Image 1 (cartoon, each protein chain N blue to C red):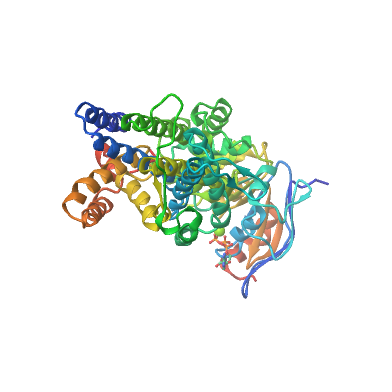
Image 2 (cartoon, chains in turn brown, cyan):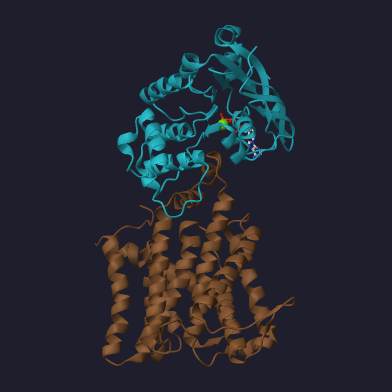
Length: 327
Length: 249
Ligand SMILES: Nc1ncnc2c1ncn2[C@@H]1O[C@H](COP(=O)(O)OP(=O)(O)OP(=O)(O)O)[C@@H](O)[C@H]1O
Ligand SMILES: [Mg+2]
């Protein structure tokens, strides 16, 4: 048994150590895998705020991931083709600047989360799952039919976007960017969880009636959590597209949404580092088992089943000997 | 004579063919404990729900401090000064005792949009929460998870959360439910001291507690008020006995 705070640092150090080792061993592909894990972790950290603290089981977070991806794709596409992006009343130029792309991704996915949240938070349980899924599917089918940006085939970006002062084409530098963003968001998540807002959100999950009787509106609290959650997953989407230099409708797919939930369950629902553990393990399995058999999802499924049956607190719960996240 | 803190006027509520609240007009005056008694299913909790905002009445009004709050939300009524305790404890079981009290303090502060500060380090919240816990005798249990509390301690915590709101009126739904004699006595003493702070509308089955605490009693049977008045009158009239033996209605 190990204290969760130590374990959290160990996990972060582990994720940092792998690409540094890969750099010295000249294994650039391993760096890319670690980057992939960091980005998926970031997406799941976003979901974990809604799902883990707020109890909002969103089966539509691929929507925000895809929005972030397409923000990157569309802005970079117009920059690389030197065509203006026509927004009806006016038009803007594309951009290859990561910070600007991130900002737009955060804002647009947060806005989408606000609208979806307004329309779906009144429902609960299975209905909430279905409605969020339905919204994500709308984006999925829309992106398939959006031929301007590649439709079903997606959109390729030839050169990775830039960050001032860094060479983003260098895998370790791009990993650094993703890792720092992940750490920042984890720090934000930790603060939020211990803050008065986190207290209210945590209570809104457990006893909404109590939250109302002390004069707070549980719906507004959950809505804001959903917006923060969607925005973070949107940011991850922009990074994911940059990693692959490619966006396609699969980023909006329900499989993607399901994957985020799986990552959280593997690591531990509501655990700060749950998504990081889940994403790292997921990428490892995907790589190792995926090389051996195309049915690697069966093994993933088996692991998931074992965790759900025997380790309710996920891997972190198992390692710390504490099943509940909120203690 | 008195400006009532809280008043219901001809409140009516039906669930299908069942009339759960039938023309109920009661009031709560400054400094008093007003007990509402009646057999199981008499409509006491339904009445409280309408007073606190969980249920919309079919007819009639709820007045709080002279203002019509009949269609106000639960949150708005809480902000306007109503503090409710639940018949079945509604506490955040995974959270600590202190955190439950902090939630009340946060509601009272009206500023939940604080993302950076640590809740347990927010002086305004902590002082208020600890004062309330101290009042009910749970201060030394602050770090315990609510799920680990005894039933009696949960009932005390319910009252503590209500205290953090510094309300204009307490609405308590069977605070003694499930308490043993000792716990009941302890809570009775606590509530007795509260009436100076704000009046209490007290729904209670425990007759010893009711007679020890109440200034006035209203007897509710099948949704109707069958008797209301000072404790001595009710005791003398036999309305209580009738109510509990089911001879009335
Ligand atoms: N949501 C509802 N739908 C239908 N019937 C309801 C509903 N809530 C309460 N009732 C019915 O209304 C009547 C009054 O219920 P209520 O809970 O107010 O009684 P009570 O006086 O609080 O009883 P107890 O002493 O058992 O707590 C009961 O017959 C109950 O079955
Ligand atoms: Mg009741």
